Length: 295
Image 1: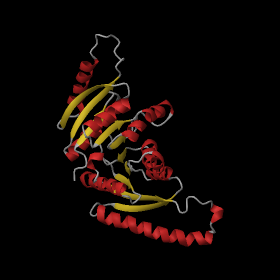
Image 2 (image 1 turned 45 degrees about the vertical axis):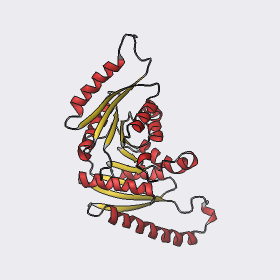
Image 3 (image 1 turned 45 degrees about the horizontal axis):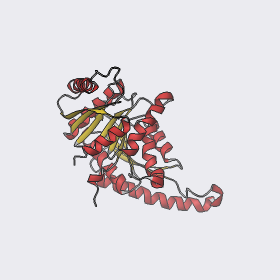
């Protein structure tokens, strides 16, 4: 399976973007993928009307290609003139049927956190394909993780994410943890259920969930050692996943988006995007592009 054949790398030529370029180079070599390198500039950005920003941008992109993306297939060097950076990236990804967008982020606190929300959040929400966020503090910009965390809610979309995690584990020869976060009776207050009634119900549910995780581990991660399963109980799945990743020194997280909008997006897809925003390590948000979906 080659989940990533066409990778889109937007760049603003910053240090963070160069880290994303390094990780893109590693991914492209792993999957024999082609990379499209683009930069978005505002139509009114030129200080002088005689300045050809398109030409200057393409020259800068060529420098990135020659210094960061050697020995891989590089397709178009795109100088995109657009008033919206996120919209330009998403439109380009759809038009060129990208499998993956790799974004270097500017951090998770203060003003930088607002920048992440303004650009990366919009790209994650509207991109037609998977998105990989690369943290500036990450030592993994060359993509050499020790342990990958793959999350699942047992849906078809999550299964696709586990498949991609398994492929990464196989090619990178690293460990993997398969994780599910469960909250028993989330809509009921603690006083609504007697503790003596809740314990056996929780035990029964846990047994089935652990069985499901073990089945996934054996069928999807067979031969990928070390591998293990984890079942967490928390009303806040985002907090649980991010805390676990930090506590266990996870290097790379794979989460799946259901590609929903409206209330379904809020309840389901929002978890994946919030994990991508809040985790301190690189996060791959898996989304099946429309042109790859059955039916």
